[in-house]
Amino acid sequence: METDPLDAQAALDAVSAAERRSVALVTSTPWYAPWYGVTSAAFPVAIALLAVRSPLAIVLLVLGSASLVLLVRTYRRVTGVWPSEQGMLVYVIAAVVVVFGTGIASYLVARSYGVGWWLLAVAVVTAVLMALLSRGYDRAYARKHGA
Amino acid sequence: MTAPAFDETIHNPVRLRACAMLAGLDHAAFPILRDELGVSDSVLSKHLATLEAAGYVKLAKATTAGRLRTSVSLTAAGRAAYTAHVAALRSIVGETTPSPG
Image (cartoon, rainbow over all chains, first blue to last red; front, side):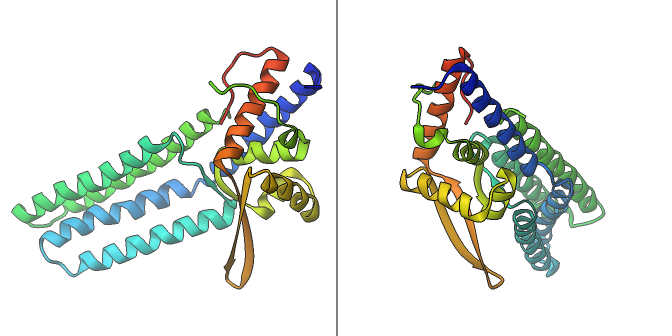
């Protein structure tokens, strides 16, 4: 090993700078969280509408899925990167729990009492929770990668 | 904690910065990597070819909207080698903090 400490320190500084740039690219999209939140809200609402056999359920499922695909494609096109999920599994699990948790609860309520304005509250709560989760993901990602 | 292992293939400044950028990513588009590293297409291609030959990166080509797009990702071996290399650098400067990645 011929590298002296000054060279090694310079290399480490370059590493830190590159990692910070990488984190900046991943978290440089303020529109991602609200889009993700609103899109995610479509799913529990659709699941609740399935309980009353509303054709709107299928429309919402299709629109939600299309919006999710468009979100990912747009993010990839704009940033040119996709973050590593390594160590971030808890956020993926939390997202699934929120969407399916609110979805199943809404389904059960809709089956017993029908749908109403309460479904709007479900949509808003889900959208806010998912947007907050997305922001939390960004912060955790930045911490994990030293930014 | 990863055992330090100095890696001449990674230590080149362009390749080291490329690996540092890729370490936290699943993949990055070739133009983004080129712009962030401030090198030309040909220079980046040459360095990526070296890393690819060592089994450290994987290049994936896909045609989107009629354009060929290349994305770059670190392989598991590349990630391990990068982490060990950063640990080696830290041990040279006397740091004892865990290496990133």
